[in-house]
Length: 293
Image (cartoon, rainbow, N blue to C red; front, side, top):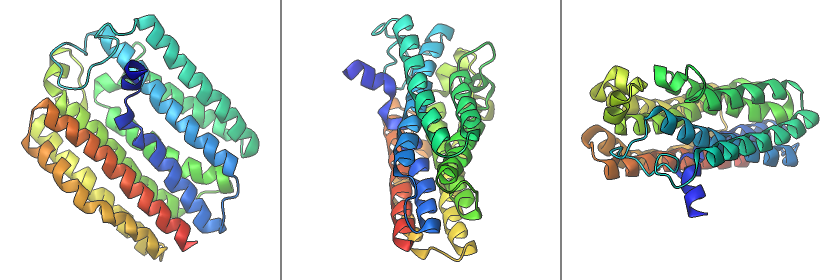
């Protein structure tokens, strides 16, 4: 169980949970209650399954391509370390995606069938991040897709399946969540920049270089809080959602580690800290939205 938990990469799961909470809370604010509680729970579970499936697919594909080597600074990867056979990891990947598909069918039945297309594209994006003949994660596009799918798509999608409409409030909030989710990947890639370069994995960090990637991380974190405040101001509230800014002091240590350290333990701690930053910001923003209702 510990091996499979490690393979699921729990430190990345806030990126799956946060957008569903924020999008659903925005819908509660607009509607005054939670119209479809079972749809919310299904969306939460489906998002986690897509994230886990993506992590497993990444574990499998990076091992096959030689990107996960013994000298990498991140946590042990179960495929490259020989803890689980590649076939079992690939099987687990498709089980996670299959569960997400079943949950997606239920969500579509209760809301709108366009969710099927959204879910299919999300799963394809998760697998093709490092899988397939031309993985986009190896071309420096990983951050773009994380912003799109864990920010814009996930937050607005969670809002849409409740009210079957879109609005400016969840759109602005999705940018905040997307920036912080992208920052998680930036930490991961700046940590692995040297081993990725040797493996010809041309992530955005490899393309930009360490210093510019560090500046990108700082921009994403600070811009996330700026957009959060701007979204609330432009929508004339709910002002209670500004309690999401309570997480701002939590950004100090991860920023210091990313901008000043290169060792694995420090950057792994910054990765966990960025995930916590996303989780706390999203949780308190969601609480403020619900109270504002």
